[in-house]
Image (cartoon, rainbow, N blue to C red; front, top):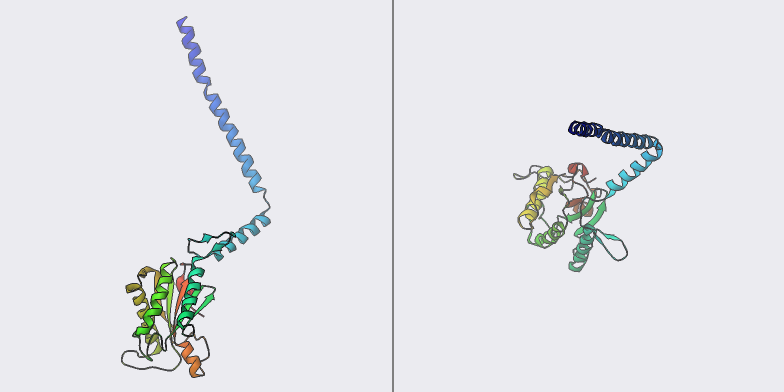
Length: 235
């Protein structure tokens, strides 16, 4: 009687693996059916959808923290700060010396050198520059985007002991603005890049004193993306 019970118990244990095996076979069949159905998707439609989504995501700015207002519209922090900066410039009468424009690479704050930032042929910040740069630093602290600081000059040659050409002058001016934003404005240095373009990227033809004054500037470009930041240099 005892041997019969042991024999029955061993037989039940041996056959129990069939249940697990059957479950595994069922799952494998379901998996292959799903893979087959996915392979039968219209490839042209799937490719068009993927390309459309890629374009939409690339068009989004990198910074985060947008707020949704009652109408469902997303408020861009960068745009909000740019509007506040524009009102500040209008209230202080600096709208002719500091201009804000939108480009494909991001938001560009263009500060004319003459009368605001530097004396002619100098890279030393004037006292009047601090008010503007402090306000720009406030904007930069509100967003995490990378920032490209570009020095520009006109085409009139310069040759001094300190600045042998416009290349050195434009680079020194960009570096001086960067140093102020880091030391006085509290902007992390890893977010900032300073470059000098001399007279190679004018906003207007260098054929009149007014146009040359417009080209003598420092551009602070708040970029939409941190990837390949240097290739977003101004046109």
